[in-house]
Length: 212
Image (cartoon, rainbow, N blue to C red; front, side):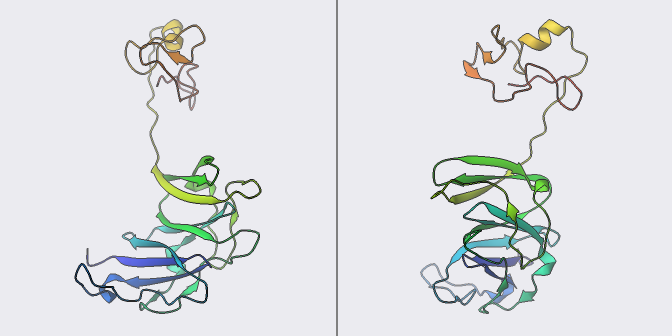
């Protein structure tokens, strides 16, 4: 856009933030220019385009630790520098896996090398300083590591008021005409189990909801 910034993070916990104007336009086959100078045995794990100066930086490590830090704690530099400490990498927390630009209205999903995943709200992750280790976001088994991180925009669960009767609330899901069996957890028409545990029992934030 001409007004964005670039944030680059490495696996050993270093990062650099610079304006996109430091990068000149090059041809498709060009090798590019240096964004961050790497220390021995280090490598880049994430490159983020910063479009919102009020956003936070989320850092996740391979042993399931994470933290979010105000973008303002990372000084704007020129490209091709050694960068600053993003997180204190130790054997306990492991190396950095990914870095994301985040806002309060998002969730994140962590996926491990064993295919286990967890989804949590950004609000559950503390806002702490730059040169810190963070807190446990996901417990991983011995030999297991976090391999991927994804951002998810929060969904608004619809609220349905003025239900006609208790029987309808407990026998129909949010899709009109989709009726549950006696157990209340299986949609006969779509033939899939309901992924929303509250959709047939009907309670969410004090109001009755129906969603499949």
